[in-house]
Length: 403
Length: 51
Image (cartoon, rainbow over all chains, first blue to last red; front, side, top):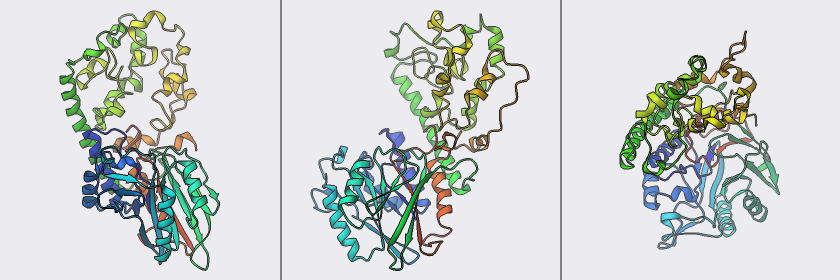
């Protein structure tokens, strides 16, 4: 069975990211997700919006301890009973009672989690649940405390700022899964049933899906379609916001004009550093902007920052209109702002791995190995440099979902 | 967790594949006597590595 423990709405609360929220709901439904928990994040656009989207998407969301102050009922079904191969799997979710419910705070309240869990467990027992899964938004310690104090919870999926732990562990009699966050990994909990069809033992691990695992074409198509539309909408908003802030192409907003330091763009650098510029033209850095254009992410803010010079910084890239002058990973990305030229290191080795890692992170650039990649962007390329190793992620990038 | 395999796949795509790994058909327990639960946690709107 497939579950999500909530807090899946985007961190940003703007209209653009609200689109992503409903898209994720549709996506989960499309995947056949059996149960979804709720955190306060799912209430950030208001209770009415959430309820409307749940009705539209038919996503099975549950919450045991978020109550409507007016009706004196829980906002969502307090638990779900999912039937799997003759088993009844009870699933319920708990929201932290420290949560700020945002726009819903006046009409909703969060019940103390242990009290809610005790009540729900009694109801699930009556329903004959063979296995009970808690989707917890209580954090690591409170999740563990709760399953220690409330009997009968077989599995807890711990969420809310919980670090990823490769192997889950047994907390009293409950198998705990610590799956990290931001879609980095999938938790896998295997419950072994005894003759009485109850949990006899459990094991858990957390795994990531690399390029060796093929994507599902129909889901990939849906994701790509959404991301393309998201990018188009981002471009439109970017232009509107730039106009509002008085930003002209190649310029900066009113708030940035006071800065003495600014990005200048490669046109200035190459006047004195022509050999370095010519070598740079042979690197992937010189194609970084086009890469985004090709996969239609050239207006997606989360991507643009690592494919241009000084994104939203003084003198740096503000909108797509700056692409010709400030697109690509240029001199100043590695060496610093042009106005700080006097302070720049003269030894190329002083561009350290830390500089590269600001963009080449484990998630955005999983194949990156400083020792192997760095020689390829050095301005004095070593003789007989072996080609970069094949990057299986390239094909996925072409598909438009990842690096 | 090796860095080169972390967050490689969009959450939804990951889930799609994961769902396949877990059960060929909804509602089936593939291995008798075992229940496999796949889970995602705090996705926070991430549906691809850079957003």
